[in-house]
Amino acid sequence: MDHDNIRVAVCGAAGRMGREVIRAVMEADGMHLVAAVDRHEIGADVGELAQDGKLNIRIESDLHAVLERSEPHVLVDFTVPDAVMLNARTALTHGVSPVIGTTGLSAKDLKEIDRKANEKGIGAFVAPNFAIGAVLMMQFAAQAARYLPDVEIIELHHEKKLDSPSGTALLTAQKIAEARREAQIVPQPQPSGLIEKAKGARGARGAETGDIPIHSVRLPGFVAHQEVIFGGPGQILTLRHDSTDRRSFMPGVILAIRKVRSLNGLVVGLENLL
Ligand code: NAD
Image 1 (cartoon, rainbow, N blue to C red):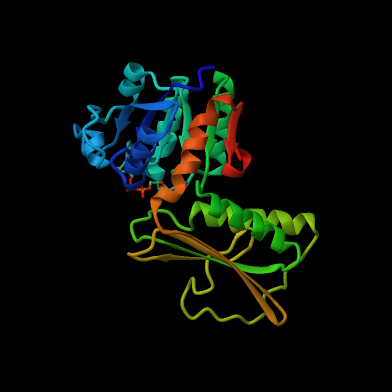
Image 2: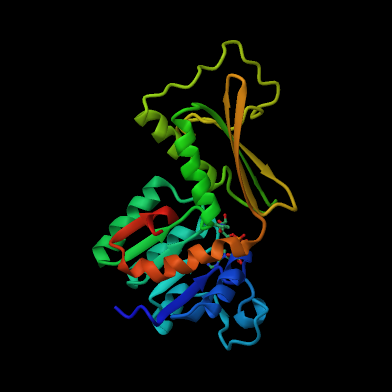
């Protein structure tokens, strides 16, 4: 397999993450950009959009046609929850390995991606968070949960984020729940007679959050931030990660582009590539 000349297409290229990915791919060794897809800014030069000078690669809207013509090895997707599954199916049908950062995929979606990737004999990769600091935060949280079972998560993102809770918060909660199960730890039951004067005041809590409350904040000024707060008698442990710039995600995205073609089927989570 030629690892030195990876042909990369970017879907969602006109978005906040897409523009950053364009810059990162242009700067990375051993890969080059062959196409860019978006619903907006059609016809615009992606180099100019990413403020990196003219590249003579224009934004196009028809993913199927783009994959046929430009024959990428890898499709990076940072679009919207509504579009990502269709894009992933289109990529896999063309034998193109998807690297997906778009959040909002369900367990059923992930199963389908894995099945289709296996059918094609190619790799696929999904990460709810490409920042190494966030991956470490999740690992530390799972470690702490073995000793401090009572925990809540607060995630804070920019006001334009469509899905909540964030994929990172859900994955953190699942990892904590798994660590608790392994250590046979049972958290304190909720006191009876709770009064929630405003619905949702105590956060979202259910099977998908491993019964751990998650609180989502959406405000201008934030990029992507999360606190995992563990409480015990007489002590509080707070783990906090802040992505203050979208550049924080790029080393993870570039690593995934380099590694995805050597995977078999779907791999989820950056920790599995490190
Ligand atoms: P954004 O709104 O700035 O960009 C999304 C882009 O996708 C837009 O330009 C939009 O026009 C385009 N788009 C929508 N539907 C499309 C389609 N069918 N085909 C092609 N393009 C389409 O959003 P963003 O801030 O760049 O975030 C994108 C996604 O990435 C979100 O789901 C966000 O939660 C996720 N995200 C993930 C990570 C991570 O580390 N995994 C980090 C940051 C953001």
